[in-house]
Length: 190
Image 1 (cartoon, rainbow, N blue to C red):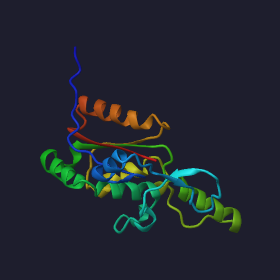
Image 2: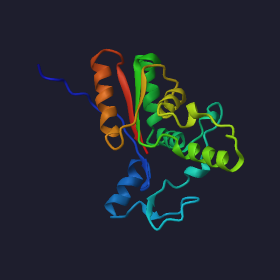
Image 3: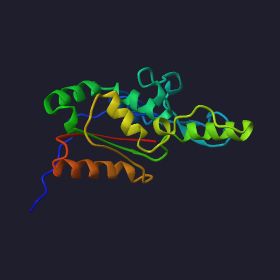
Image 4: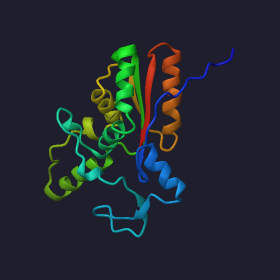
């Protein structure tokens, strides 16, 4: 029996080339790179990194401030591009919030917040106020995305290194084919 394909109706991107489809495409067409010399705090390494401009100045605000970490900032920034959040709102009205799944891949989760907490532990003998569940747990970015978009359907965070980006699409496909959701938000972040 042939498998019916699913369509991608809306998409966006945030990456080291730009925020949104048009800026990313423009820089690709110009042959520009999103890499720059490493300017990451406490990392004096002779290497190149991809950094999303403005990420450090874009904390997650209330009521989700407890979820403030790099991955969730990237998710929030991405959802604000290319009218993506409006497309999700339209889907939410069509299918209902409990019929839209969220499938997010990550290779690092919120490792930066865990590293900072560990450094404070080593220096002072105690962990600082630190919400592992909301900032480092592999599920945190999926939970954040679902909360941010006011969705209530199935959600999962997948962390299988580089293959996470493919596995989230496969998982969303399986959930939809099993009848567990009618639409899916699929994403991948660092």
